Length: 274
Image (cartoon, rainbow, N blue to C red; front, side, top):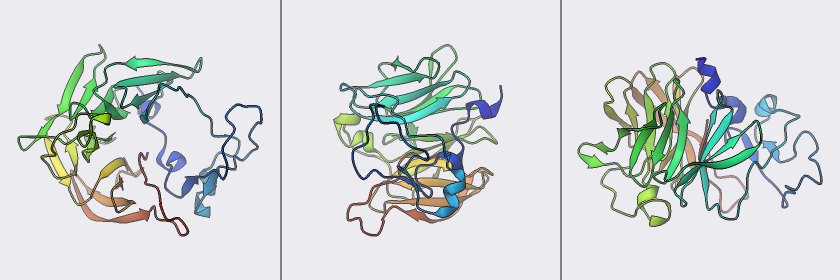
């Protein structure tokens, strides 16, 4: 199986925060009655160096909307099956959009209040479950393998998002604990661990804490050469941090980008990044 087929969108082309921002001055018309002019005016480069990564004839499309859907998260693209998986955390289910017929249907219920999803390089889906405070992998036969649920004898907070290392197939994930802070997106309960970023070894399944030098680690991704790890912090810092990847360790952590923009009193956060 070609690894590039199941890799989620390329880092530079589709990240929603690295120099490109979506901004709509007025409510967007999603009915299709007024076709969007190219290039899409709602795709704005904050840094002109990113203009070359914009697809000039591709508009933003709304793939799905439903009044019963409460909160969609954790999109993961499967290039082999040509479908998109995403979570509806409060409704405790996963949905799937199929490219061939533009159809959206329930993919998994219950989902463990899953948040972030991804696919490994063998085509298996990996999900971060808020409700069960764990990272799981769905095997080819549909069974569920628990990859991480505890660290140092204590339950994880509520894993948020994960990414697979292309070189050694290890799984790196964030554990900010949002799913344990209230029942809306998981099960409310105490946090027994400092918010942190972890690594699951592909062979031994040993779990290693990489760093807890971040307030609320959320979305994460590697640079194309795997030399750096970028992680969004959805805490008070409202920024993206970056570390040098030194084998199975992280070093030289620092701020990469701030979400605080001049003229905005209430800046948003970077969330999922790829």
